[in-house]
Image (tube, rainbow, N blue to C red; front, top):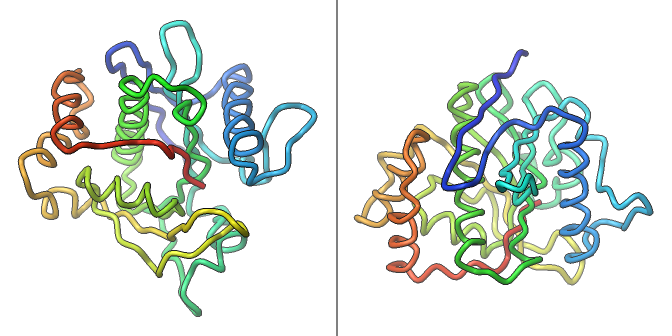
Length: 236
């Protein structure tokens, strides 16, 4: 399956599909800092890179700052490859549940941002939203209607507050012993408009869907009005 690349700029952040080896190293390095060093959910590697079997054939997108530093990344696994939900995250699914896999589906994994590593909250909120916008843009470019992923409960609530059409597949539970509560989640882009209510959510969704606009000021206003406090910015 030939997948289309994306690329757009949002107020100094360039969001694009990762293709070069240098960019892949940046992705694996950020993931190592978040998942291995900060969260300690994955064993550390002497290489300083967090790489697993799912990276083979997967698509990564990244949000890069003007100086070239990677600020956020996420990985898409296509329907014709094994999902982490079918193995590592199987315990968070209801017994007998079958993940729907088709040309219009994908799994999102290894969301990582600089948010837990830096303390400039104003810019970090924007970094997360921009990679979310990349998630929408990549899905739209590749005719992906439904995404599956596992996230912390706090992230799920944040996405609900933003206006994302996310649905919990099962009650939250700890994936890692002693770790935070997590949820298996389905996101259906077809419901993005119909499930959006409230002026703040509507402005956010309008911004999300228009990759030609750079309404960072509007986004900041929405974040302020809704009182969004983003501390945990890593998915699974």
